[in-house]
Each structure stands twice: as structure tokens, then as C-alpha cells.
Length: 349
Image 1 (cartoon, rainbow, N blue to C red):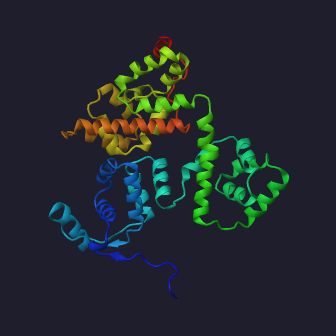
Image 2 (cartoon, rainbow, N blue to C red):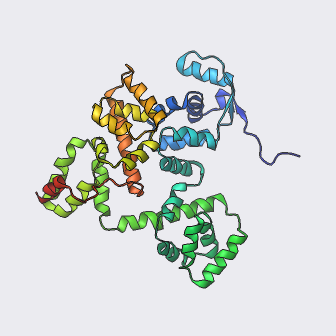
Image 3 (cartoon, one colour):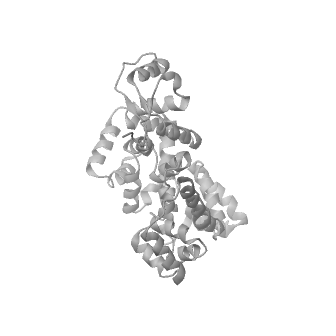
């Protein structure tokens, strides 16, 4: 019987696009080394690479030899390799947080965006129920099928009886939804339930301004907020509490630090900690698992040097991870007691 799924073809060098050649080269080296390269890609380049990784098929060792000869003048023929969605997720996951990987893969070739479903599951059950009340039962049943059973049960209690019963009937014998339709539902949920309310929520403009300031150099924070505070003191106070620099890691609760550095790759942690003082370094290392700590300490104790630009980039990546986790409610970066003397002083100016 002929297989329903055809095997991916093997390509010669002349059949590979530039993105596919880059994908093959990255698959052929250590994941930690590939991650260092990936962190230099912008979002559009990552999407191109993700598409190339998925459709790459098998690349023979002889083709790899030609590739390395082309870029490095010499390379010994090695084993064949194969691309695919799994390899794309693994390779990108070495360099970026899981939510960013999910978004890149979803935009590139329709892989389910898990971050949407996590965000929906974090909403109030009544909010989700009100949204589903205006949807077709088929759409409602698909959305609920992607969520945790306990959460779905609580949503069902708020649905109108007719819609609840119709939705449950459809969930018993689900109809397969085409990939484009599934992605459309995800994007609609993102716009209507997640990003829409966030854009209209009080303080959303402050959050946008804070995000921009966070992308600048930390030494500019106080000056910028002081200027904002002259005309908008209340907003400046809100913005100040949303600002976060690499040095602020030391004030995070231990649990939040553990979550942050559990999501960061070892190479990124090592690079970011280069040049930090012993006290700061110990705060970070104390949250790592024993094996991870030994690896990081071993690398930090080596004589290896890193360009200041790479260190600065690694620290910004860590800060971006912190802010991403805070935005999703997984950690808090504001002081627990709500006090912020410096912010109050700036806001009053």
C-alpha cells in the first residue's frame, strides 16, 4: 500500500534556497552554537528560517560538504540530516523563550500558537463565557476543546443553557477544523480577547511607553521619567514601576528569579553574568539547579572573553524575558509593598 504521507525529498545544493542553506548549516552544528547565531536574527529572518527548517527534507553529507566549502572553504563529508517542525522548535527553543518560539512558528507555517491558549486560560471564566455566547457552537466547542477541563467546566456554568448543551454535543463528536480556520480562530482570539482589552485597559499607554524606555540604556531611565513627570506626574509614577534593568534582577523574589533563569539557556546566563560583581552573581547562581550552577560557574571561571556588545545583548535578552514573564502574570517585578521612593520623587518633579 502506498504511504499516505510522502517522504521529504533529498535536495542537492543547487536546489536549496539561501534560507534552506542557512537552516542546514545550523542543524549541522551544536545547538548551543546555533543559538548564538539565532539570537542575532530579527523576527522576519526567524520566520524565513522556520519555514526553511520545516520544508528542508533530507540533506546529504555531500551537500553539507559543499555548503561548508562554500562558506568556510573546507568541510569533511558527514552524516545526513533531516529538517522538520520538531527540529525547528528545538533549534529555536535553544535561543528564545517558548512563547516567542510559538509565535514565530505559528506565523511561519501554521503551528498551533500555544501562547494564545495559555492567555485565554488565564482570563476570568465569565469573560470567556460572554465571548463564546456570541460565537457559533462549532467555534465555541473548538475553543473549549483546547482548554483545561476544570476551566471549561467553570465556563460552562456561565453559558446559556441552549449554547451549553449544543457545545457539549459537538465536543462529544468533534468535527475536524481545517488548519487555516484553526489559525484564524487563534488570531481572532488574540485580537478580541487578549490584545484588544489590553489596549483599552487603564494604564495601557503607560505600559507602551515603559516598554519603549526598557529598550533603552538603563542610565537614561531616571532622566526620561523625570521629564514625563513634569507634565504627567501620575503617569510617571506608573511608568517608573514598570521599568526594569539587568541590575534590578537582584531585587526580584527568589521564586521569580528561579522562573526566569529556568527559561534562559546556559550560554545566555553565562554571557550575561560576565563582568558582574560577586554578590550579584551569587544572587543569580543561588537560584540555579546544582548541575546548571556548576556549568555556569565553570564557564565563568574560564579565561574566555566576550565582546562587550555581546554581553550587553545577552543582558537585554534576560530583561526581555523578565518583562515577558511579568506581562503574562508569571512573575511580578513591582515592589511587593507598592513603595518606590525614587519613582514618587521623580513623579512629583
